[in-house]
Length: 331
Image: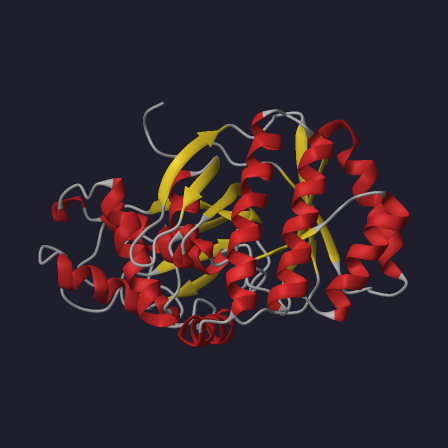
């Protein structure tokens, strides 16, 4: 998806005023797949947002495929559940994103949730839809495509840092939440190689059916590692957080083969040249790695990391990112 893409041309009977939804992406600090296998995981929302703007009815738009078919599919999904929405094709929207695509940072979920939120905001005649319903609908929409879990939907809708308890069906439960330390910055290393969520989930579901002992070992060990990650996060222990995230990555690599030689080389360079431990975020086979450093050192650390990676991996990008705060009302 490219920034400022416009999709769906005919504005027809739609809202007369533009409406924007801004949704963060998320990094998984520990617990990939445990949101649907069962077990604990830790997510933090990242201020690398996806924005969807519903254009005024007079604006029209250009039919582009940067958002795939999701604009039309989300609109059809909503119209099946909200008869008050107007007939016809979806509203014209403008889409932009700061998150790298297919990177394990849930940029796809952020786009889907932003489409939900923008369409609903632009059509108040459909009534107010509770936040929890939006989360559930976004999960159901993606489950039909990928057959995966609900960490991504909960993480980007809620914002903040979350300790989640996975469920074999339905959305994970929020066990605890906390604000990510304001004096820490997340560094995202985009490997410029895409992951494949669908292929990965099919592989893991085959492991479940075969009662694979490696999967059982991964689940037990990563559940315990998620506890260590959360303790370090709540305790503001940056060294402990890096160590625990490294353990989570090793389990992903050695037990579930989620990493690649390229990703391992990026990790080695970051650790040996910069002293920054990195962990793969998401199902793997490509995508982005994440690390955490003091905010006051973020720009200098990012510059050193770019220099370290440039010779062997000139296409890799280093993106400093703030944590995104809580989006939903309440304490």
